[in-house]
Amino acid sequence: MWPLVVEIALISIAVYLAIAMVLIAWPTPAPSAAPGTATRELDSLVAGGELAEPAAPRHFAARDGAIRLYRVYPGTGSDVLVFLHGSSSDGRYLARLANALVALTGLTVVTPDMRGHGSEPGRRGDIEAVDRQEQDIADLIAVLRTQNSSGRFLLGGHSIGAGLAIRDAAGQEKPKPDGMVLIAPYIHRRSPAARPNSGGWATPFVPRFAGIEMLQRFGIHIFDGLPVLRFAVPPAARDGIETPLYSWRLFASVTPRPDWRDDIRRIDCPVLVLAAERDSIFRSEGYRTIFEPLARATVEVIPAIDHFQLVTSEEGPPRVARWLKEAVR
Image (cartoon, rainbow, N blue to C red; front, side, top):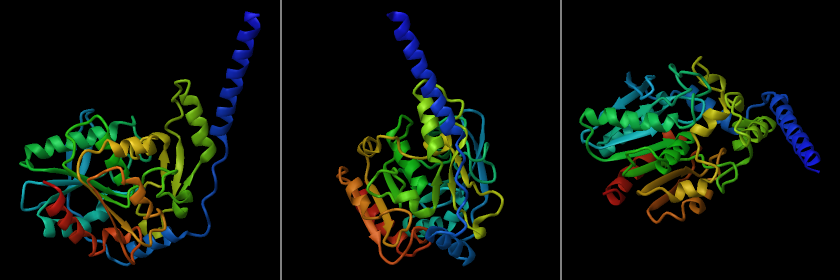
């Protein structure tokens, strides 16, 4: 009897693993020939010259010895906002937003390039370990503390960068932020703010996603570095250092955990969520439901702008300044 049971179990495991391997090897979808709404909006934003000149790059040494790039927009006080960029890009496009926040709030705004991105990515489109982004944030804050940024520490981001901010605030690394500024945050593909394929901006390789996660149940991680997601980066945003493909590891490292509701509940500071009425990537009204469990969360939807205009609109920075004065002690 027992040999038969063992044989059936081994056959079942072999079939399971074979299915996982087939899914991983499944052909990836071809890029769309027609750009979606979000892609056209980003193309227009970059080509239109609305972005400011970024600050000069600086560098810090992370705990694993990697040299990481960041930019600083100095304020007049001791408070610092570490603000994270969105998918496929790097911190350069945040310069206009950073300058406006400095002028209105006195904050020093710091925009690091997340690992896997920018001109010094390490592994473009990939990362060594899922928790490395959070470690980098903690290491950067330690460096900033030595440079007299001894006041309040605020954390924020745009789009998937705001997703990483949520992940970091809910994780194990310290210090924890005194406040958070989340602009059109990525939450989860099944959250109330989600649109199918992020409105055409992101194309997931669904079979490969499934196959990799099947193997992970057996502790097999050798395929975690394969690309599983493609972004529809428009021509105007292609300068040779864009990151159009994400591995499973990179995507996991910059997004809230699968139990995203628990990540939200773990945030223990005032939160400002700014969304765009015409966001074609996320459903802005969904943020009210997502952040309802947080008593100190404020959700504001800015009318007549889209997802990418959130970082250039003159509406956003005054809202941050008002919230900072009223909500963050």
